[in-house]
Every structure is written in C-alpha cells, then in structure tokens.
Length: 496
Image 1: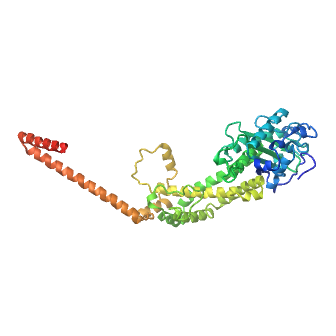
Image 2: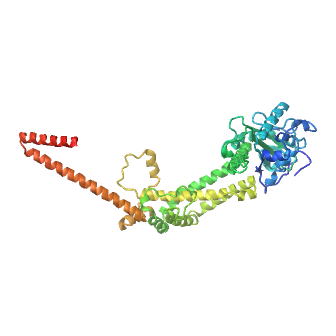
Image 3: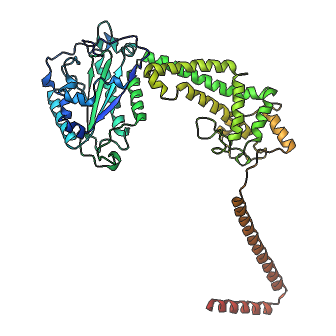
C-alpha cells in the first residue's frame, strides 16, 4: 500500500510474515509482444529530482500480493526501479560489485539487459517484503527518525544471489561467471519495505535441461527449496546479535530436553517392572536375521506398514511403548519439551506468516518425530547389545566402541536382562523370517552342489591313500616300472 511518503512503514503487524519473498518472471517473447524492454526498468535520466542518501545510516549506530506491481506492468513504467517517489539515494541501484551504480554503470547494465532480451532469455524477479517490526527488532530501522540501514540490506542481498543463480534450477543459470546480469533496489514508498532483485542470463540458452520442451523458451520457475534457503540466509545475515542469541537459547533448550528424554527412557524402562510386557512384545516381533542391526531405518518416523518395512510389527508396539513412557515416567520432561517446542513454531509463524507456515511441516512436529525416532533407536540398540553373544570376539573393538557399549550396560536384575534371561531359558526367539518357495529351491540347489563337491573331494582323497599304500609295498624295481607306465599313460593322453 502506498503511503505518500518514504520510510513511513506500518508497525505492529505481527500476524503477517515479517519477511517474505514472492517471485515472478517474464519471458523475452512476452515482453517483446508488448513492445517492452528489460532495460527500461532502470533509467536515472527519467528521475524528476536527485534525492540524497538522506536516510541511509546504520540505525544501531545513530503474500504474493506483496509484489505490488506485476512484472509486465513494471516494464511498462520506464525507470520503475529508480523512480524518485520510491528511492532516497542519488544512485540507488546496486549489484555484486557496488552498493551504488553510477550513470556509466547503468549504461552498461542496460546494454547487458538488452543483450539478454535479444537472446530470448527470461527475466526473473524476487521481492523481499520486510515488515517494519522486524527491521526495528534487528536495529535496521528507526521509526522516529526514519533512518534505514540500506547498506546492510544491500549486502544481505549480495550475499545470497549466487545461491539462486547456481541452485535455483536444474543447472546453474550462467554458463560462465559473467553470464548472469543482476541488479537490485530498495523501495520505501509502501507501508512495508520492498527490496527488488532482478536477474537474467545474457547468452542464448541452448541447454535442453533449461528449456521448456513445448515452447522452447528458457524456464522461469525457481526451486521452492532454494528460494526458502535463500530467504533464511538473507534473514540470518541481517539479524542482530541479540535476536540471534535469544533464538539460539530456545533451540538449545529444545535440544537439551530431547537428549535428556532420550537418555532417561532406558533408565525408566530398566528400573521398573511395569514396562516388561511392552518390551517383550517388541522383542518377539523383531526379525531374527536382523539381530544386531535392529533400528528404525532411514526415515524421520517409525514405519508401521508391513509392506514397507520388516520392522513394522515391532514399530507398532514401539509407538505404544513410547506413548506410555511420555505420559507416565517422562510426563513432566515431555510437557516442558512441548512448551519449548511451541516457541519455535511461534518464531516461524512470526517470520513467515500464518498462511506460509501452514504450507510446511511445523518445526515442532519435526522435533517431535526426531525425539520418537531417537527413543526407538535407543531401545533397539539396547536389544542389539543385550543379545550379542557373550563369547563374541572383542579383540578388534576400539576404545570408542567400548565406551559406546558401556552406555548400554544394564543392571543384572533390570528389565532388559530379565527379557534376555527369560528368552534364553524358554528358547524363545524373535520372529522367524518367511522363506519363499523360490528362495528355498535356490538354497536346495546350492546345498546339493556343495554335497556333490564334497563327495568328489572325498573320492580323490581315498584314491590318493590307496596309491600311497601300493607304493609303500613295492620294491624299487616295481616302483620304477609303475612310474614308467604312468608316464606312458600321461604321454598318450597328451598326444590325444
């Protein structure tokens, strides 16, 4: 929304995203069809007046509708990026090398933009829409004096552009270091700060991975994951040390609580009889041929579908046990963990807005999944250690491995040792793996082959013994005659 002035940003907008980054693009063909030029975005000569850097100072020392103008309409306004009603600097345009491009720089920029358009390339735009509350919180804006640390904002944008160029699409946008032209500007004429970033490839795009299969035009869509990473990096660059420290403390508390709950779970399970039956149910469902390697697997949560994981049956019982633990012995620690976890969600919602946060997995949910996975793997590792053979060779185990295994030593009268003792006493084993008919036939063929090979070896050995016995009973003359016959027999075989 236009404010009729500069740096008259609205405050107390905490329900909206503090910093969002909508994107759009226009193809050269679309611009050409309307007689528009990429280069018309920048033109210092069209300014009504030259305004000094009156509010560019370090402050701490003294919804897609956030893109207020469609990119085609921007091109229709000559000098849109540098219009006097939006900027406060004599030379507001910046790029990788300079925070303020002069008239000569702008002339070269316009030539590059025209070259890119002549080569049929796509112009990209990202707009950083920043609420005043976030700027104030991070010492970038003073609402009383209207001072704004524009240099810090520009440097943050300079810091992330290469990520967008290199990783935003299937291949790096430029085919050489100088093959991408980009520029940015800060606009202050709306109720929040808008930082615009435009970029385009200069040389003609011929790589199939970067072209639409139907139209043949260069693709314009940037990976959402890279856009989000770029936005996060942009925000980290601008955050004040005080804000970073405050947030880091919340992350640290959540991590510490997660680790404490995970480590306390084994002690709680081992020190009381009430979890014996739960652990026994898990043990009997474990695949026997995976003994020593029982674990959740390469996933962020327990898989309970038997079509997907052979650990599914055990995982179902494991989920029940974890729920029981978190609502009983570990209830207080878990409630504290959830409260701290909610703070991380609040931070994310404040930064990204309620609508944006609904489109991603909540941070608290990711931490919840991580906690449960780590608890499950801790218990599975305890089973792995408990049922290792007492006679296994320990000579090759490193000191680090010994220290790690020491963490899983349980009391002789604890729950885990009782399960082990009872299982060994009753001869109870984990669930047997089902062998299919095809697998059984393959095993039979292998076994038959081994038996035939062993029989041949045995016959050869008996023949050798008989020959040795005969030789021992012969005279020297008989031995010589026998050797001659063997030689003749060998020669005949050779001639054949």
